[in-house]
Length: 211
Image 1: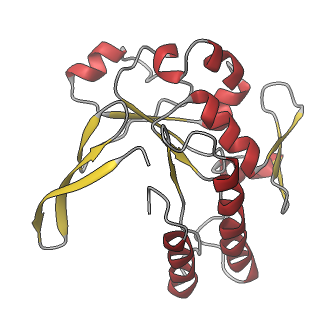
Image 2: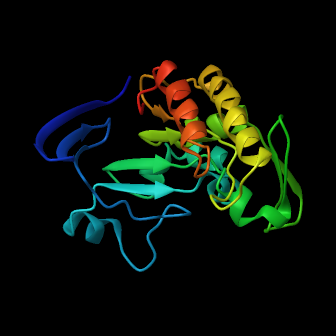
């Protein structure tokens, strides 16, 4: 495990804490700006440091398309690629199941996208998502989950929740850098408290760093 989480103070249900990651000691709660393709538009990394930014989110799906995770790895990882000394988090690419649903086909194997760049099909499996994120090198990496809109009800929500738990096991098995990168799971179950509780308990049982 490559993190430590220390609670520094509480007030009712609120808490202040310190999240110690490989590249930075973050004070929580915090704001995490989105740098989809390795950059925050309109700001330099030095400016981000000056205003107290502690961690940036990168998008696995878009980074895999351009400039590619292989190139980022050759250049020493995303921290060096974007000249950012503090913490990074990459998502799994799964959110594109919702945002690019018209371009995606979801099966037990993974998600097949039609690339918005060149129109070619791209299969994102739990294993491939983790391998891409291992090459990118963020402090926190997210497991691929079956993402559905929270407004959806019925069998599809239950299907997504149980598939998310099956996929987390594949993500854990594929993760090659557990002592350098922290794998976090994602809770599915829509707005159904029973399904969400099942998912939470399933993730906690797997003893992930981000449990």
